[in-house]
Amino acid sequence: MRLLFLVLLAFLLAGAAQAVTPSYHQTIAIRIAQMEAQAQVVRSGDPAAEINLFLGDSITEGLWGQPHCQMPAGTINGGIGSMTVRPILDRIDEILDRVQPDEVTIMLGVNDAARSRAGSTETANWEADYTALVNAIRARGIRVALFLVMPVEAGKPMGDAYFDPRSILRFNRHILYAVDADLIVNLYHPWLRAGTLVGLPGMTVDGVHLTRAYARAYCERIKLSFSSLL
View 1 (cartoon, rainbow, N blue to C red):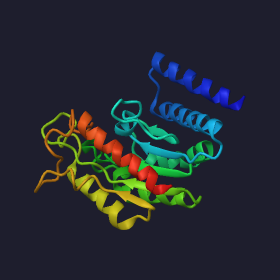
View 2 (spheres, one colour):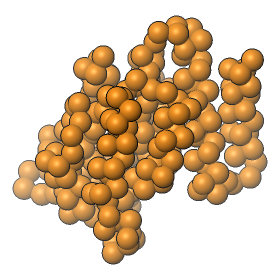
View 3 (cartoon, one colour):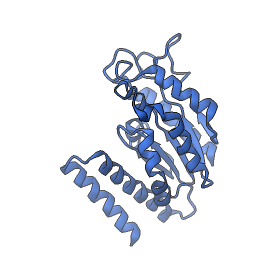
View 4 (cartoon, helix red, strand yellow):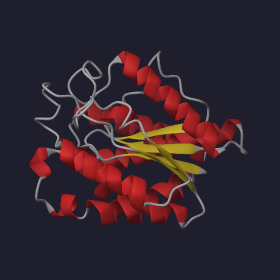
């Protein structure tokens, strides 16, 4: 009965979201309910199933269900468009209590590098917030994988004019050298254009969201990270 209620709630909330544009906090609440419903569906089929929750932004959110990106059973899409680290840190206990994942994969950071956020308290405290997020998950005995923030492409609307490549570099250095995790996935350096801090030409459609070919490679790396944590 609880499973049916959660599934119905998630769909009702999603329908309401289409009728009226929700606030940022309402969007987070809707997505948490959907994450919980997805986890309940997985466990109803196999109570012993391992669940890997992927916390990310629109890049993560848009991958699931694409024909070139079929995720393994047990993966939960926790991507939320425009998401940054701080709101997830503020809700992480609720997320973990409701989803009860065995693993969490963090794919956040690019929105924190938006040039419009330069000088904000949130950006200044990014390293501390990111570390606190990882530590809060690991404190529960949950395995953690971290994806470095991908480079943005130059010369496109959502590329290096919108996001600051130097902030992305700063964030990735912190992830690589200052955070304890069970797995760190680095697609940042392989996808950098030689001698620059921007991504390879043609890797995105708008500067940040991946083309189908690169999304396929990204999904394969997601699957590998999932199997590596099991």
